[in-house]
Amino acid sequence: MREKILKVLDKNGRVTPEDLAVMLDLDVETVIKEIKAMEEERIICGYPTLINWDKTECERVTALIEVKVTPQRGLGFDKIAERIYKFDQVQSVSLISGSFDLCVMIEGRNMREVSSFVSEKLAPLESVLSTSTNFILKKYKEHGLELTDEGNKDERMLITP
Amino acid sequence: MRNPLSEKVVCIEPSGIRKFFDIVSEMKDAISLGVGEPDFDTPWHVREEGIYSLEKGCTFYTSNAGLKELRIEIAKYLNRRCNVSYDYNKEIMVTVGGSEAIDLALRAMLDPGDEVLIPMPSFVSYLPCVTLADGVPVVIELKEEDEFKLTRQELLDSITEKTKVLILPFPNNPTGAIMTRGDLADIVDVIIEKDLFVITDEIYSELTYNGEHVTIASFPGMKERCVLINGFSKSYAMTGWRLGYAAAPALILQQMLKIHQFAIMSAPTTSQYAAVEALRNGDKDVEEMREAYNQRRRFLIKALRDMGLEVFEPFGAFYVFPSIKQFGMTSDEFAEKLLEEEKVAVVPGTAFGACGEGFLRISYAYSVEDLKKALEKIEKFVNRHKKQ
Image 1: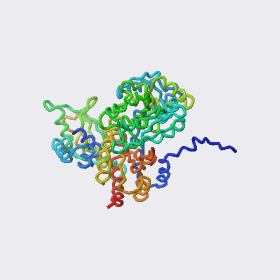
Image 2: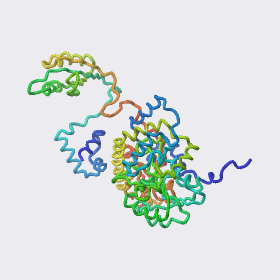
Image 3: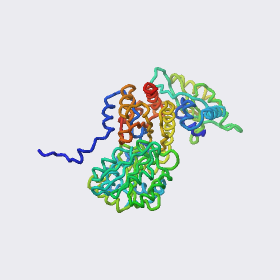
Image 4: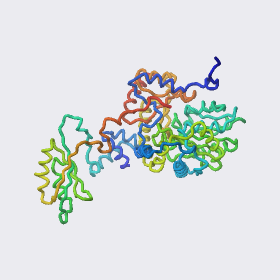
């Protein structure tokens, strides 16, 4: 049941418990209880909105930074990851297999803001061995959703047998 | 000048849906719940395979019966999902949509005067195709109290000495009705005893919501009496690719193939390559779409019932078929008024046979958001016209 609820919410966080209950053939109380439980268990961690900032007036720059670090004895990568993800500018941090360790997404108002964060905050950290900054030029798809203008139109004829 | 036209063709009435389409298409801002095809795009990996086949230069005819790889995959699919085994070499052919297969099956089996039983309401093609094949259509009017299933008694009552073929259109467009294993078991012995053949149109087979779809061809003694029709339009959201297939005993299929060979040559090659990919790697897509339809189905039924409309619960396809008898309007009047006053398009039940009078076909091949918008308007309309 949880999986079904999550699959719907994953696509649309605004579905009400009432609608969810009808769509999944459950009763409303159960749905409300389950969602609350999953929020408390941090299975559901939030309900952000997917925004295509490129279409707004807001200036925003996003960079993907490949970070190599030295893991700490007894703590592995978690401690250094925490040091990094606590910064507000950091949008996401993941531990990666392959040629580097942490994949860090940074957001700033302009390139200067991002690069100064990297040079002043990130690179000087003791366990950080190296960073490689990749600025994102254009986003095409995020969270399974296409950010283009096409694809949303209903091309079907209005009435068909 | 002589009359250039065939009387047989002229006498066929144009589809009722066509008439309504003409009215709707003049309204630019109408919201439609009248569509008979999926809202999903064909899964990308399937489209991509079609594109790749074009890049490779696979732009020639295939064999008349269709690509061998595709027929092999169809045979595997029918075995895996429907529990019937067909020889890909002699018992399966690929057609231009399920519609072509309906036409071929009728033309291959009918002699002038042979009667064909057509349960209605149902898809618009059966009746004219029977007429064009010189058969005599005999309508079986299905009833709401039976959830629009074909009952043993109705079948028995319609059989005459001339009856040769029964068309079995389940899961059904427009009612959403299905025939369960038990429902089919009830009619199988009648079919065998009366020596009938069955054209079983299972184009909506993957859109069944209360357990597995069962084909009548899987009953003992039935495979040799059945032409099983299915396709890619509904299950894989591939309507525009125009691809379906028929599976039948070689005796029948080889004659269908002969007509196809002279009339069509072969189904579109690009579509056939894409379909191979759909059958090989598309199970997950089908499952996801089915789940989405099922959620909308529940949503729509609940909303319509909350408005006070009578709706039996349909377990197949992507249609609900509510009764509007309480409003004292015909289906056509209701649909036209709804369009005029609220700009919502639904299809009058009569487009699928006279016995669809008093019902509407509402499609849920739309997102829940779209359904909500339309339902708000339908609710307004219903409240305004409800008899006190």
